[in-house]
Structures are given as structure tokens and as C-alpha cells.
Image (cartoon, rainbow, N blue to C red; front, top):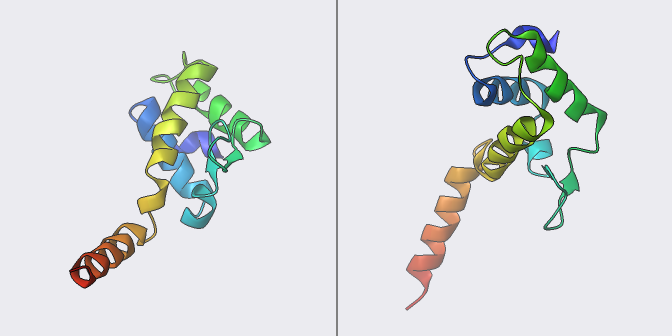
Length: 101
């Protein structure tokens, strides 16, 4: 059960649940609102799982939808760097910068 993943804060629980439930390739396709050409995560049933699971944790039981949206927003912001993409992007940028005169 997803609620058993736990966490010491909403941000920690969000990080742990998302890491468990979504591969990096899928994370990069979404953001909370669906802006900037991405898919909208808060319209998915999966959002309801992320909203309901922290309610079973004594530390995070008083969260509201906005709190969960903000925690997920922070998580999705870093999605482009996960799964080895940060190193690959740094290597591409290094190659580009050494090729320009």
C-alpha cells in the first residue's frame, strides 16, 4: 500500500511515493498543471493516491490539496535531472561549449 511508504514530511513522502510509482521517463512528461506542453498530473486518479496516502500518516495527516500540489510541483521541477539525465545534459553542454569559438 502506498501509504505505508511513509515519510518524515510531506515533501519526503512525496519523494518516496513518486520514486516508487513513476519511472523518470514518465515523470518528465508531467507537471501539476499541464502547462508548457506537459501533461496535467492533478487531473489523474493517481493524484488522488498522492493526496490520500499522506492522510494515513500522523505527521502529514492535515495536508490539503494545495500542499500536495506544491510538493508535487517541486518534485516535477527536478524530473528532468533524474535517471542519468543531469549527467547527460552536462556532457552535451560541455561538448557544445568546447565547439564554439
